[in-house]
Amino acid sequence: MGHRSTIGRVYESIDRIVNLRYFLPICLGVAFVLRVAWILCVHNHQVSDFTLYAHWGKEIASGRGFTIAGHPTAYYPIGYPAYLGLLFHIFGPSEFAAKAANVLLYLGIIALAFALAKELFHSRFVAGITAALLAINPNHIAYTSVLLSETLFTVLALAGALLLIRWKGIAWAVLAAGIVFGAANIVRPLGTIVMFTVFAVVMWNARRLISGKRVTVLLLLLVLGHGLAVLPYGIRNYMAMHRFSVVSLNTGMNLLFGNNPYANGTYPNDHAVYAKVMALVPQTRDEFAYNSALTRYAVGYVARHPLRTIKLWPRKLVYLYAFEVDAIHRNVDGLTNGKKLRLLMPVTQGYYMLLMVGCLGTVYLCLRRRGGGIPVLGFWLLIVWALIHMIVLGSSRYHYPMVPWITMYAAAMLRYIGGGSFLDSRVYDYSAARRLHGSGQA
Image (tube, rainbow, N blue to C red; front, side, top):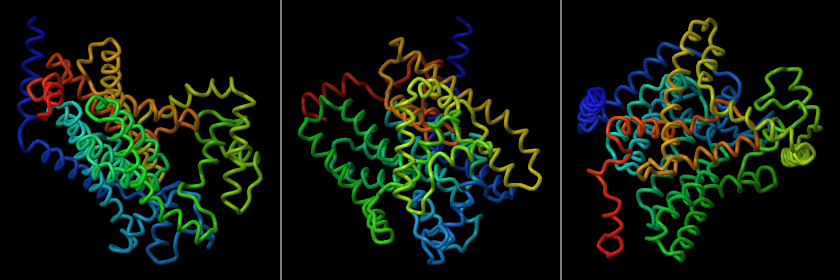
């Protein structure tokens, strides 16, 4: 009894702090200082795909366009290079400018995650703890100096989700969400799947309040907004390459990496294995034809070897969700003498594991029907994200957009431990809301 009362007192003290009006600005300030300090202290250069993003950003800024060896390309998504091109056009071809922009993008992630957590859990405690945990997330601090597309994608995906959740059923918000998710899709070609997942869950939860006819109209508006965002990219591809496509053409390669005789669940980092995989399908200069050939091979391999494909699924999930040291690796690889940064790996991994324990604890209680009306949108996103990467391949970098959702559920677990429920009944009463909607007063 005394132990429980101690937990209660600690929770009440934290709750008072979190409910202060200026708590979110404090979190944003802490996040800003930590990330600016990181990019001022860690002078890394870009490696791997991030080198290509920086190169294409400079090419676009100089007016040479999105090309490979002088030829127009649609192999990689154009969204992030175009974003870097805009930055470099305004501030000059400086990687520091892009890193500084990463700081601002992450402040957007924190603010959007705070708003989403408050909207979903109806608890300023959960929202505030989510913001605080994201502000000090060590792996995401380290990612500030890496030019990766996931940061921009996460901002857009969270913004689209907030539009659908906060203003559900309102036409302009759904149209705007379609546009935002469309922009996300040309940054990483998963924005469409996230969009439909969020829309489906939101509409299902509101099925007693929104008619089927209204849902159909909203779905059409969502698709219209999405089309408006991706259409310019399709037109660009048609004009430059004489083929219409609104998605990048590296999907086939990713499918091949995850489904071939040498597949291990993630990218083939061994050069000999990589060469064997690349030799499976003859390469051509026609990106559209090559993407189709890669896709056919991967699909055919899955059809011929279903059991081996299924056996790889657990490994793909491990590569996707189990590790949180990739940002440190990327910084170390981009430094002449960065081995000391490896000392941070236990910190980043330990922090992430605590978040995952909290998130999985919330899942467990929800399955045991002790969730107290906990919102399931984040669960569905985590599941859909896992299914996508079970089909393709896993990599720790790829769970970046899911970290805000994992953090929300970890924060909800802290609220459950301290307050005995996930939702704050002082702020929101579901039964009262249903009565209001039913009587037409809401």
